[in-house]
Length: 372
Image (cartoon, rainbow, N blue to C red; front, side, top):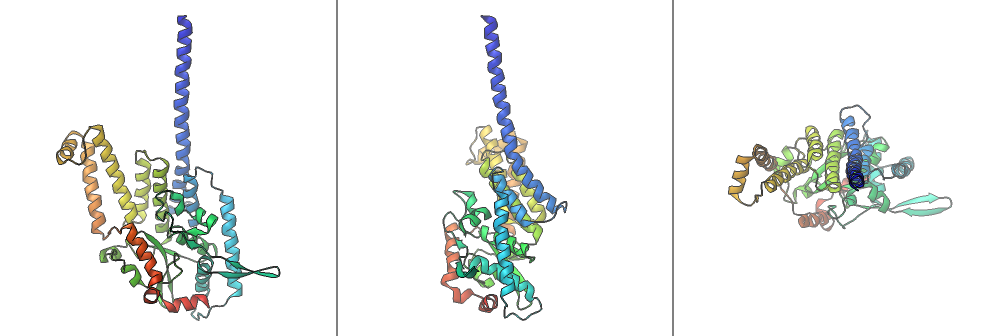
């Protein structure tokens, strides 16, 4: 009887060990998709593999979907849009007369594909190509982060100020043009530099070319934020990859909401090496340190809403003291570089104002050049 008990006990413990090991292995495999995406982007930043914004974006989305994203299908859809763009380039001649006409024609073509209804000749029939449209459902991805993804935009033809400029940049690069992403509060848009007028803005959520006054009209773009490159800066390709690293960190938090913060911090720190005043990455890094500090408070059975508790935990735990000082420094820096938080409901009103006050903010000359 005792021998049978020992055998059963051994089998039971072995089964528990296997379950524990297998769960750890599964978690490691899940993490591996994120590690692979991080390595892909890091290799591009270190020039160890060719730069591709498309590959960086899809690697992030594939990590969130745990390797289940159909990359071949997505590349096929991008390939269709690329071929469509090339056919437009061959058949349309803009009125634009400057020496950079070829480049501007490519910008106009990508703009048309994303924002305009276009006739397509198919056999003996003319059909209407429908553009991508703005989706006001879950604009910030609070309920489902995939609402920010390019893959969702391609599947539904509905997107937002994250996925639409990302697709614009991907498609522009596919046909051999550059495209600079730029940031505003809660917002991403496109900046281009051409000979007929210099820098201009392309706002894909409304299909309008707004002047800078529209951006500053929000009231949440401090002069220091412009000077420090927080907002309204034309991001280069490596800085755009920093945005992908932020997306990766944010997706990781959604996949593993109780993570220890180490992967997130590694990813954000790499992004900030490339783009030091990237406000969203700075904020998420500070919030991650705050979460780590809160867990230390919980470990000491202390609440964070009491000044004496904050002082006590710093005296008892050097790590808590380090995190508390780091958090204060980080939040202070975010304010000093000019970042101001824009309430989400005000953001939506501001976005809609571009259409309701179109006459006030639109660059009409560019619209004529891009559509004729």
